[in-house]
Image (cartoon, rainbow, N blue to C red):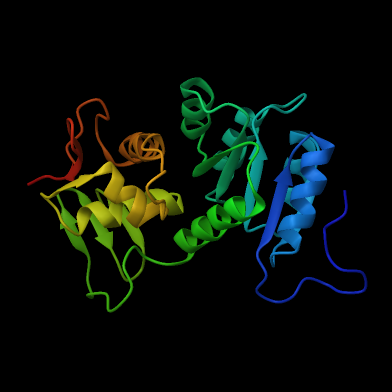
Amino acid sequence: MDERIPPGAGPAAGMPRVLLIEDDVAVRDGLSMALGGRGLVVDAVATGEEGLARLSSRTTDVVVLDLMLPGLDGFEVCRRIRAAGDLPIIMLTARNDDIDVVAGLAAGADDYVVKPARAQVIEARIRAVLRRSGQPSRPGPVPPGIEQHGDIGIDRAGLTVTKGGEPVGLAPTELRLLLELSQVAGRVLSRQYLLESVWEHGYFGDSRVVDACVQRLRAKIEDDSSAPVYVQTVRGFGYRFGPL
C-alpha cells in the first residue's frame, strides 16, 4: 500500500515516518488515514515479510506492528527488527492477556496497544516512544564525565553505556530506564513511577512493560541476570539500582 501522503506533496521535514504492519485492511486503512491526518507519514503493509522489506529500503522512525499476522507473525517480525537495531516498536494486540503481551514485550517491543484503539491513543504512544529515542531521561544540564557503577560505565552526556570498558548496545527505552534508575542509585522506584517517567504512561499504564524492559536490560548488563546486581527487584515495591 502506498504511503499516506497528500497528492503532489512529499513528506514534510521533521514529520515522523511510521511503518504500520497490519493485515486487516479496514484497520490498516483506517489507522493510515487517521494517523496521516495527525501529522504522521504512514507507510502501511499487510504482512511481516513486506514490512521487513520496507525497512531495508525506506527510512522509518517507528514501527506499529500487529502481532497476529499471516505467514511471518508479529512476534518473529519483532525479534528480527530488534536483532537488527534499536528501532522503536509498538505492538498491536487484540487480546490484553499475559500470553500475548508478555511474549510481545519479551520479543523486544517497547510498548503495546490493545485493539480496537483510537488513533489519538496510538499517536500518543508513537510520539512518546519517539521522545524516548531522542533525548536523555531528564532535561537540563548533564554533568560531564562517566559515572562508574561497578564495571558499568554511564556517560549521560554521550548517552552511552559500557560494561568492563566495552560498549553495551541498548535500545532507547532500555537506556532511559537505566538512566532513570542509576541517577538515584540505592533508591527504590515504583513501577508506576517508572511508567510515568520513562514510558509517559498515566494511571492506566501496564507494569508489564516495565518488567519486560528490566529483563532485557539485565540480559545486557548483568553477569547473571537471574542474580542481578545492578537492577535489583524490591518485592512489592519496584526496582533499585546497585551496587550500593
